[in-house]
Length: 308
Image (tube, one colour):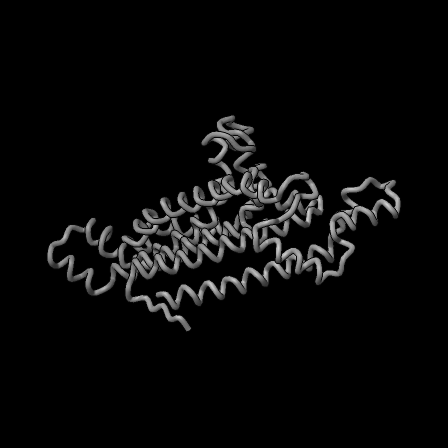
């Protein structure tokens, strides 16, 4: 286990460094924060002075070395857009993204497990067919269109929920539902297929022959043996959502998280803030991957964790 953890940490460090390098280069090639921050009538001397103030007049390699050195001590600098420390902005916005992400994936898991089990109990039955059709529709609907549709229905037509922003539980419902649907459709199919395999296994037939209650056979034995593939997909959905798929939903619902902040940073060409968001997101994905691997090993000791 120890060798595996060390190896994954080393791989994660390489991934994070690679992401930082790519984003650093791309933001320098396509962005011009000086043009955005200064007025149109700014002189050449004013532009040169502002570039020197930001350190953008130095060679790219020198800028990168300075950036990596500062990031190592969590000094992300000051936002060009908001004129305050970037770390302060991330600490302020990250809880909203974390809340939205875990609420959406939690909702997807809570709905997918019972739906998948019911569909697996009677394959090709009515419930199974409905679940499969809804799953296909859920995978086909773009998230931005679904979000707008939910706003029109529940906010503008029925007036039950707010259209955007954050606050109480009522503000969370629509963005969490929008974000949960794609994960739900994939999870329910995984639960269905794995439960069908487990319910047809020999040990289930033996348990039923011994007179074990059906709910115990399904809800304890079969579901427990299906836990690893289900949690694997749930973990993948969590990482996938946290690593960037919240951007669309946060933008549609004006949810004040890191995704919306990243879009605003791109619009204002705030390179410093954008780099910090990408760095923090990459670190989060690496840590979550490691925690999920350790969790899978704890659930099923038969899983091999090779350090190679």
